[in-house]
Image (cartoon, rainbow, N blue to C red; front, side, top):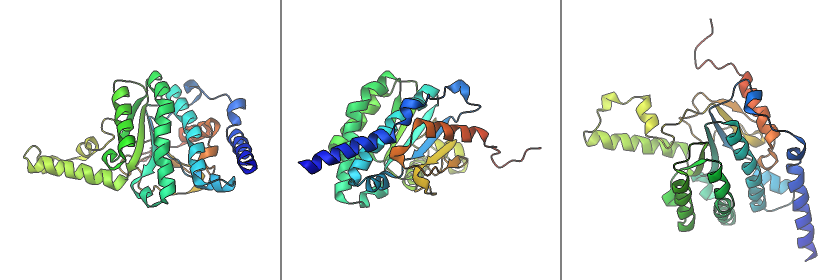
Length: 267
């Protein structure tokens, strides 16, 4: 009993420390930025290391990560950014310990139960990128319901990548185009980049402008490989549960200072 109380106090302290800047920092408005990305991607890395740092099991780290995510989604919506793609669960994450996978599956249910009303009220359009049919039945039902409920919303497109892999997405797109060609609905010689883009989960959305991966790791980990072709990359060392709106604003400011040439050269 005493140990549970100590753990609870420790968790509350860590939670408060992780989000203390929200009480002292005034988030920037859209007008305060020189330039904002249209599409931001985030690899939310560091939940496990956060948990280890604070002497918790990894599921507690993932739970704390959802606290950070809530604030980032809200701020992205308020800034008028068109799309936010978040890497929540990859096709490779099934290789993790069964206890961690089970905790992540439970978090899916809890996240939508607690957030769907606000997301819908904020006019957020939820899209699930990945193989939904490969998820457990309860999670699958919740995801389909969230997409259906928000499909007519015209605000932020919140792309939640679940059971997702960039190579798998491209493979599915190729299969879709090949099927159309086999049925004589498409001339293979006419396939171009636009057709490939339109066969992806992100069809109709702008390409990713800014990719953020927290915890200092510097790799894509099979995340939105096509869409991130010309994205600007930032790798802040802060662990995801400690990533605040201040950190996010700093990343957005850094993006605004980048010289984006898309392979060209200024005269």
